Length: 80
Image 1: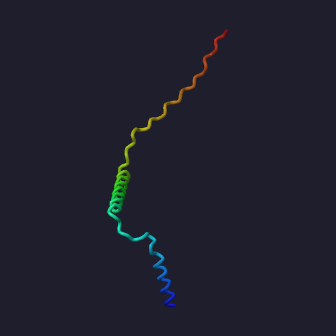
Image 2: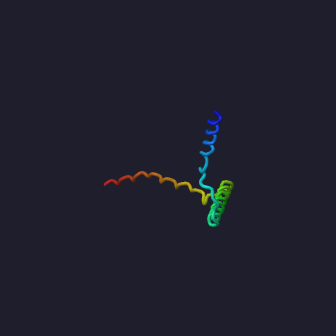
Image 3: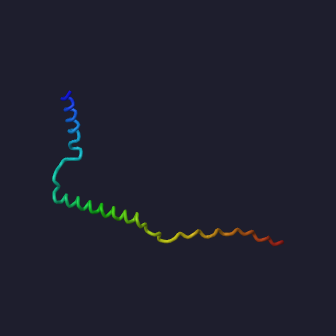
């Protein structure tokens, strides 16, 4: 029974190995790319927070549509 339990636990632990990709130390260029990506992400999140806190004012207030033309009755016909 103990051997089966130990084998099951070992299988569970080994199943998770490598799911997040291989472990390695990034090169200097990769570190720079990662830092740049994180900086852009932080800037975008900051802008989104600022926009949520202070939404921009509308450029102009919408104008109501012009009034519809009033219908006119036709002029009476002149007798001949």
